[in-house]
Image: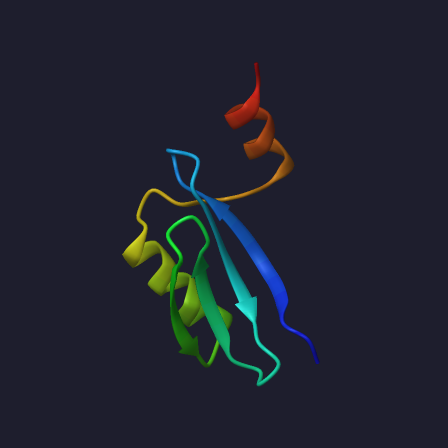
Length: 72
């Protein structure tokens, strides 16, 4: 199994974050713009709690979020 992006997030300043599931079944937070991360976590929920603790301004990316954030 290859690593898989489970959910994408964005901070108010535009920095991108994501939670991935690795080939070993563990979850990791990847703070792409920072070149940093956190994990492993046993569950997605644990990973998401840590993500919000580390990056409290993060928001889940949805089609609505993208329209609001990047509307010209």
